[in-house]
Image (cartoon, rainbow over all chains, first blue to last red; front, side):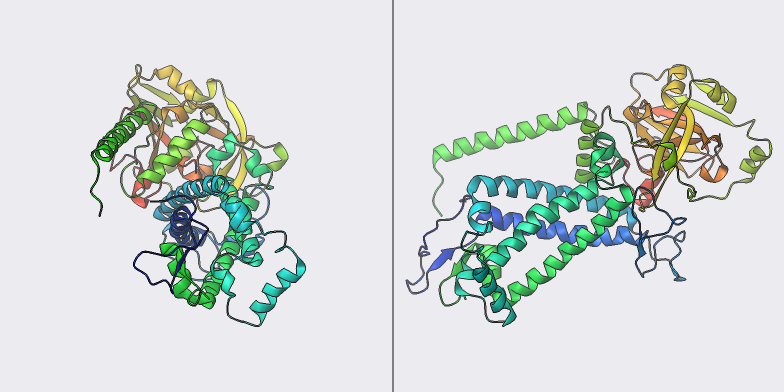
Length: 256
Length: 252
């Protein structure tokens, strides 16, 4: 298997007619790490939700418990009868296996991220595919993409082969800001980790601030996921899914 | 499909063998280095092992965060669990003067300690956070006898790898490795915020392990047992939280 970035030049897949050439789109490493991230993220989301249910109150600073004033409370029942929620109902407690699976999926996310990060730097994937080019940074270029989205016009043909500047900015934000932040704020809640690296939690302003940030960064990642899937459907679910699974797009008719 | 060449077959075979030998050697090494937790099997085993091994390497000499006196929570949350038994109430009426901590198992000199015996040993006061796995937390000053002082009295045998500690409630107990048992912040705690440790917070004697989450800090400690395996101790793996599928190692 060719793990490196596929050839830049369009090439003709064997056994296909010349009129229907296939263009290499996503490298194998990008595809594998993408789907591993999907698996890890969905597990983290579900188990994270289960963990939050045991104490759906959020605080700022170092400490927070049912005797202190919360920053906000989620309007849901809790899985513990010690938490006053206003509901006369206690949800089933799923905290045990949820925590185990949350950290296991966390490890999967970290290892996947390491492989992707090393590959992205080494292969030039970040520089070539994700960093907007000088021309893409121009306001007119950015506005052209925004205007196309606002008109709800079909995706541009070149979007099948490379990311437009708005996509690049969104992906860079997720890869280099949101995922590192969600891992950091998660580790800042670990009493073992913070014993070795106290600055991980003190820089955030305390354990409860870390927990609240973890919740909001996760929310931002969910927001990205929703928009990402909506845009995939808008651009053509089958062609985009095929590109992320097989690594190829059919050009030019189907690609648009 | 193209037939596989002899050269590919030989190099592939050698690489696979080398890989398997490498994985086997690595497994033996991490086991010898004490980086494998007792709950390393089952669907969550890989995650538990990675967390435990990573933190054992990272936190070998680390200290849980300690706070200044003005950070002490005005309203700590006791999270009272089991209502005291009649036996406990009898102890409470006598001011816990008959309360004993027995230490047995793989030790040279099994012992029994009263609260005043413990208080006559070198003590430690620390302002640390109790962080519950549910998400809430509070800070208090905890005063107690470091567990290693008690272990020094009884002399753990070299085979001992785990330390189990038991509450008055027969269904409530926990266990840790000897690294955490010998850690200076692991304390048999009898005081809180300049007073005796109140019963709702685990008085008269609570195990405090500030580098792990709250569920490891078992209240009403009466017995300690050292062992080379957790298998013989009580149900399943030898710690009550297994019934709730909680991780044995709670540093995460």
